[in-house]
Amino acid sequence: MPPATLVIVDQDRIAAVAMESSGGLFDYLLADCEPSMLRAKVSFMLRMQRQQQLYFTSLAELDRVNQHHQQLLDATADGILGIDKNGVIRFANVAAGDLLHCDSEELLGRQYQTLTQADWSTLAVQSASENAAGSDRFASTTGEREFFRKDGQSFPVACRPGAVSGDAAVTSVLLFEDISARKQAEAVLRRRAEQDPLTGLANRAAFQDFLGGALARARRSDKQIGLLYLDLDGFKQVNDELGHQIGDQLLTGIAKRLEKAVRGGDLVARVGGDEFVVVLDDVAGESGCRAAARTIARALNVPHRLSNTPIKCSSSIGIATFPQDGLDEESLIAASDQAMYEQKQSRYCQVA
Image (cartoon, rainbow, N blue to C red; front, side):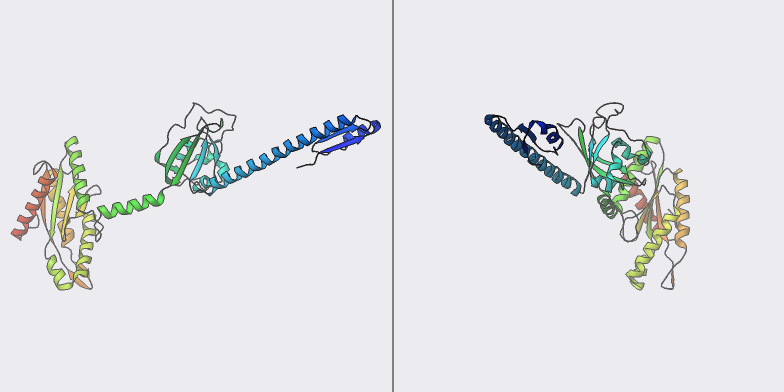
């Protein structure tokens, strides 16, 4: 803080002394002034110096607090956006820039809603004096949504908005975090819950969900659905004679052939040790089901070569159609299972 200065001067030196003032509290008195005036001037300048000292101390404390708050904002891993009543970003912390792969200052003056557009970095910014169309456009943005980084790459975020009082420039704050890792973990868990670990096909639970959805669509649009129930012939013998490792390789190879033999919108699932099902969505009745079953039978009849050993493993296939053989999941599964059992008992026909 600059010192306080009181100068006693002669009348002819007043102009020169005034020019020498270099900041801080500064005043002067004539050399022949009354002592009472000198005491009053000194007392006044001491009071002013104390007030000035308090002022500079307060400024330093305010600056320290602001720096501390800024450090806290910059230290958090969440992106923080300060938004005005028109939805324009007026503040962005370092993490916001890091998450969006840009400098945080590049976000200032942009509509926060443009972060959901791949080309947001090419859009014009608005100065603090400009008014965007509409008012209070921030509203509520709670929940999950998709933001785009500066390079156009999208990523999922979880948003938590809040209101700000006492600041005319910033009326709302938006916290957002990158939840890509969480989404990936959820996808892995979902696959584990819906996927057969050996073959990668849908498991029984996923099959039942898919069949239920297919039946609902068929009822609304008056379409037909086919269900093929497959049981491998002679698989137990392969397992017993060649071992479970070869048996697992055989199941994996059969799963790949089944997926290639059906249409893209159909579902192949493994529902038991050597049992598979195929849901034919929007099929041309029983004739369409039989055509699909013949394609599958031809694919499975080609011998597999495992450990330099050719292995042939055909399948018994039972067919059921909606609405002819059943109106719900249970009745269709039971009908296709029964048809497969009857076909396997006959032992001379590949398809029943």
